[in-house]
Image (cartoon, rainbow, N blue to C red; front, side, top):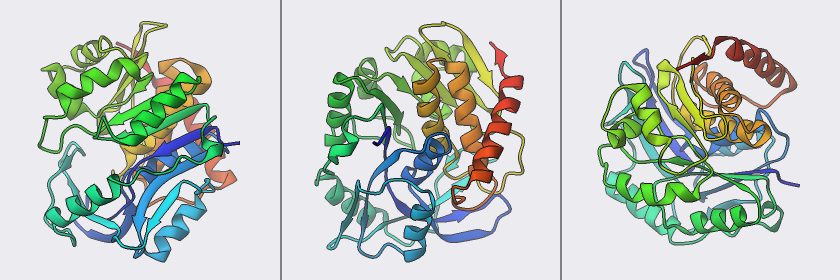
Length: 312
C-alpha cells in the first residue's frame, strides 16, 4: 500500500554550483527531491510526475535507485522533457540563470502541454495517508485530487511555488491555504506576502492563513515552524554538513516535513525530519541511492537536529 504520494515536476537541469563550476544534465524539478525526502522516512512512497520520451537513461536509473513506486510516472511520446538552468546567491536562494538548453518560451509551452493532460491517480495511491504537492497552479487537476483525498482523511501538504520574480500567485494562494493541512513556503515568498524580513513576524503571519502547520524554509538559515495544536514557534537550524549544491534541498525538506507531520503531528519534530532530508541533498550533485546506511545516518542526524531546535 502507498502511504505517501509526492507530486512535482521532473526537469533536467544545468546547475551553477557554489564553487562556480557548471553541472550539466542533473535530475531535478523538485519532484524527485521531495520523493527522496519522504522516502528517507517511509518505505511506501509513490511519485506522480511527467516527462518526455527523451528523458536520459541515467535520470531514470536515479529514480529507480530511490526505491519508490513509479506507477504514477507519465512519459509523453510527443513532448520533450523539461530542461532548465539554476544558480544561487550568497544566501543560497535561487536567482535567474542564463545557461539553459531550452528556450524559456519553449519550456513554458511544453509545461502547458503537459499540464493540460491530467495525470491519472493510480488506484493504490488514493488511500494514502498524505499527499504532498509542489505546484504554482492552484486550480490544476492534481489540487482537486488532493482535496478529494483530504476529504477521505489524507493529509494535504503543499509546497507553493510563488516567486521567481513574479509575485502574482501570492494573493490567490491565500484562498487555497485554509483547505491545506500543512504548508512549506520558501522564505522569499513567505517574506514577500508577510511584508517583513523578520522571521518571527513572517511565521506569525503565515500561522493565521488557515493551515494547521507551517514551515518557512530559509536555506542556510534553517527553517521556522508552527502548528495550531501546540501554538509554539520553533527555529530548526540546518544540519551542519559541507554544502556542494543547494538544489532541491527545500523540496527534500518538504517531503520529510510531510512524513514527519503525518507521523508525529508536531511541527518541531516534523521540521527536524525536513532538515535532515534537506541535509543529504546539499552534500552532493543529484540524489543519493536509498540505502540502509543512508537511513541509519538519517536517524543519527535527527537526534542531532532535535538537540539544536530553539523556541522563538
